[in-house]
Length: 301
Ligand SMILES: [Zn+2]
Image (cartoon, rainbow, N blue to C red; front, side):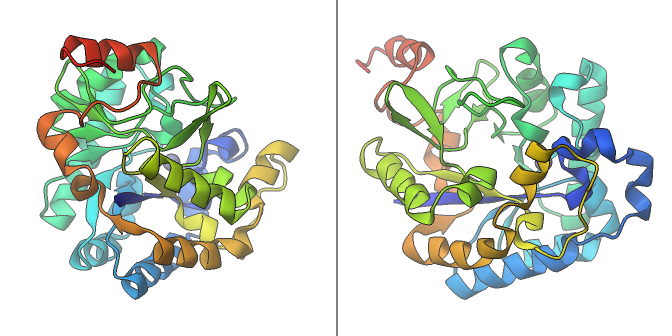
């Protein structure tokens, strides 16, 4: 089974949990670490012979166009993480549309390659702003990875479908991976969970998605997760600091192992079948919506 490896390309000061403590107007004055960290990741991927998808902020691409070209030249997929790292749930429609259009134009202009994928900052699309999916499709994206089917204090739609599926607009939503256990969905897709849990738990989760659900896994990481030397945001709350700074020094070795022990590829290739057909073969249903989707195709879930 080939799984999808993805990276959200943003810097340490753009993380949503720190937003109340770092004014956006200060971004340009803060020391950027993203180039160093993306180059480290490119090295790890090259070592393992794996390709990945880089969901990149337009703001970052404007400042580091050579880095964006290195990502594409190494055979990776360039996708969009929006322009300004504003949560979709905190924007009006036209503001959100403008952010999507601006990021896509910048990324395509620099890379010369079409940008098919989008990931909303902080997985900020749920039932209350489902209109956002329409705008992602209308602005020329083919797939999105913006809904996390878990319960979390900052994001998540616990009863959303766990697997790639086509929405009414034709857009294919590919959620980060979860495991279904004890009647609820547990996040195993990456980020803070990957750093918090022992490696073997994440590996078990990916194996379970592959073997029990018969689906490719979708994982995500951030360049700052590989950077124990990043500046500390001291006035952020204890919970935000715990989540952000936990086990940063261990990520590199863990990712090396993850890249070695599983097969990985870009999202557009790992989910090529789902993107082409709109959804994969129906697997075990995890929610009412999954069941409804399966039923509408006349297939027992
Ligand atoms: Zn982000």
